[in-house]
Image (tube, protein in one colour):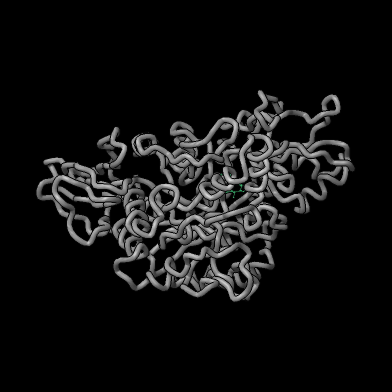
Length: 556
Ligand code: ISL
């Protein structure tokens, strides 16, 4: 099968509100991104995934779009966008836009029309239902808490919103919705963007009988039975035929409930739907039926390895996966998966990078991850912005009986704002992010963790990422090699092999802060050390793996 460019690429995700402010507003913007493109070129990444920059009332930081063909003025203008795209292309960097079409904003013209009367031509762009016995049509709860139904006084019906009530779900059963979306995608692709990351695309098909379920402690039933996975694929195949087939794109489907089996449809290498899936099984290993993801437990390494093994071997040669620890919805990788103490932060951040970047799939770096940025020490909710976190705090303290301290411990471990604090460019009090008041607090550790201190330091986390990115570009084994998990039962080591045409690579990562006795298998005697993968300055030691050590060996 012919290699696609996105199989050899490394993606860098930009969350525009938090990347670089160029005006002093306290919020990042597009000219700020353009200014920092040389930094990304130096890192060596190939593609930017740009979180939404469209016109939006910003209820969910841009994941609520009120005009798909305009830029939110806080981020700049369409001219700023065009300049960013042209500059990125001149540096050899592609830009993939976020496409949020499971829902729009309630301030989108379509929804304004839709809610104006029952016989408006836009009525069926959304899901409207009558009350049942003066109650909501079903009892499912939304992703951000509360009901999925919102009552509309004017037309005396409920509308569906799986996320906030300002994010009404688009009705993909109406063919006009697909027509509008495909036209809009065509418009951006003709402009020169290189593809789309498709927000919750796995949710666009619903069981429109709108079933009810067994309610949990919040009084609402889980949402997932509403989603009809089989219903999504015809839409994506249609999208491929009508739009994507005209361009050479990278398309990424965010499908939180994807399984290895469904991913073979979403991301088949036959190119019938999308380039790759972005799924969450490895970041969903903790949680609680009542509290959802809001727990402080750490995932078990054995479980993590099992999930990676399943995906790596399950998709090999058939479909393509995304590799990530972090994104704008997840806590910071080094805090969540490794060790953000002063003693171990750098070493363990590099270990995580090696572990992920040498697997099969397209690696994603979330802004600041390449510096080893950490979670934020939130003490109370006053500095937390995210709407999901505020709902969760209410649920934890009111429905689940948690104390304030317990709820805040969950926030510090899990909440999305950990990832959204501003990018740490330098050691100044505002981290070089803004000259104004930042929209979210800047982590005080910017005095130590910042780009200026790392970009020219060959021993930095940044340099480690640089090395891994460069390695992928010149190694067929890293891109295409078959994966084999070793030591599946070790609670301490993540060890795997890649193999391609007789060439083999062994990757060894210690996920603990202590030495682990372990012998490199004999067939690697005389193998060559892969420098870019190693995080200690000196060679690995015989018979043991040092704390948070990562190394790789290549054998013919
Ligand atoms: O963060 C989550 C809730 O704990 C995820 O379940 C998340 O909501 C889900 O992955 C979908 O995320 C995407 O769509 C949301 C938006 O808020 C997220 O930022 C986006 O990544 C609604 O558009």
